[in-house]
Image (tube, rainbow, N blue to C red):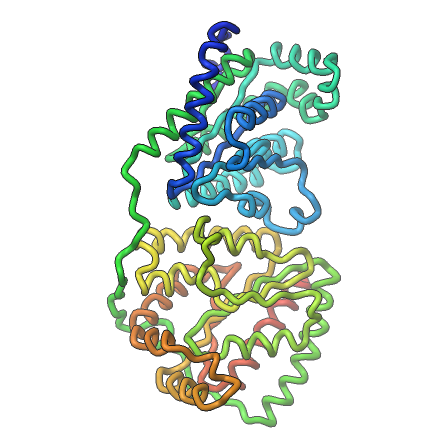
Length: 491
């Protein structure tokens, strides 16, 4: 892979000066046209020439409008980043549609460096590669243009480059331990890089290996590639993001929800006795979880008026408000619509020892967005794999993931709607959309059945709660959370 990047290509100063004005105009023109486009650009700068990556980044900021070019350089994990799944740091910096995100020392380069340094083994590297593949596929499937450049320099040229940098005032401090390690373990680094690049150069996220020995040749190559790729993409007829008006599902013979026993009940005295006991238990477990830096993500889905909010309040009653956050999920904002649908959830993940309780969640993509035609069939079908990978990364980071679907009958839902209309402090909970959604009950039931079957995994399985009786449902949720936290704390 790297043989073609060791041919000694050069661009004379004269040729460089001749091309520079055209390259600058080309980059700016494409960048300004991008502002009105319906996709972002992910621009990756990696390679064994770390100093070269910095120079290219600086050059792009000089030649382009820096207001629409967000640079992200990833050093060692900060404490905030270390408390969350590794790809949190990349998802939260994802650029909105119409803008460019520039990434240096990113997910691929970091995986290679960590493997050579011994921070991860072969199993860990394979897991990173899989994460990279899924991450980049999710972004490209969502429309992002991904341009990846690997700046390669032969060992002898890299040695000269680092020595020259050390002797140059103002640049000596830019040579870091990582640069010296690359030279010292050049062969191993090259072999790992070649393997990882081969496994992550696929589909719409191909690597462009660029010879970096001659700075002029390198800069011209990178600029030309960006202009050509971006111009080509802008010239393509835009793919409509407007899905069909509706997506009615074919009725299943028997769904998972059909098998839920909705006759389960708890008498008031029994309920109150169990509630007090479980609150004491949960208070103790949640405090231990905080002390031991164990994070939790709890997801609540279910029918309108099924009791999601009530179940959440019974949990938070026993928890320290400083250690949890309830996150109600509604229609995405304009800012959220400008990103991949998972972006707003990645950025809300809890830190070490904290819990996030989602009142509705990322499953909106395969529920309301599917049924109401707010997502195309391709979008909601590929979401199953994207969601499973997302939850898998949480579990790998030892985040406790619990998912609840609170089920109730159509008759009970209607009764609760009528009660809400009569009670003054509950009127805000009922809207015309609730009745409209009710008319699509069968479609939502089929969507929920497929969602549960496709995304219930060992590390993030669905707990289906019988919700016709609120007391039963609340106790069932409390018991499930306590059992799961106790098991997780024993590990």
